[in-house]
Image 1 (cartoon, helix red, strand yellow):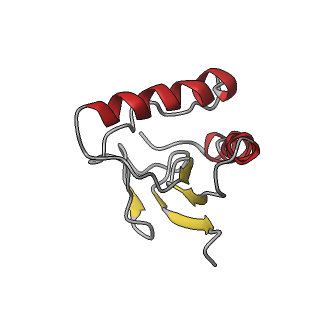
Image 2 (cartoon, one colour):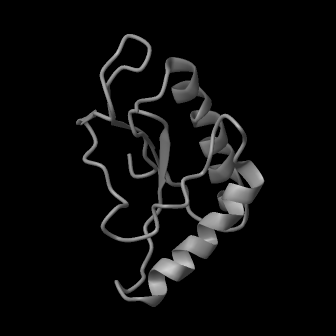
Length: 115
């Protein structure tokens, strides 16, 4: 189901903290996007699409999950395979029913270091 407004907004602060940590340890600035229900950080990685790469990505996602996930916002560790990583930004996120407190929202790129 879609996030309520407060859940949606709370997701952006931890995403920025994760990006800050990764920048401090040498990662480039990410593309920050709004998924429609939370936040995405997009990093270019140069890995083959093989059996070993999802394991490596999963292990890398475990670290920000442990450090930054809370009861109200979590790092999604299920986005480890190449087929699930991208949204088509600008489209509507349509999870569950479109209700007044859990509306469908449009995904969008918020910040890009490539601008």
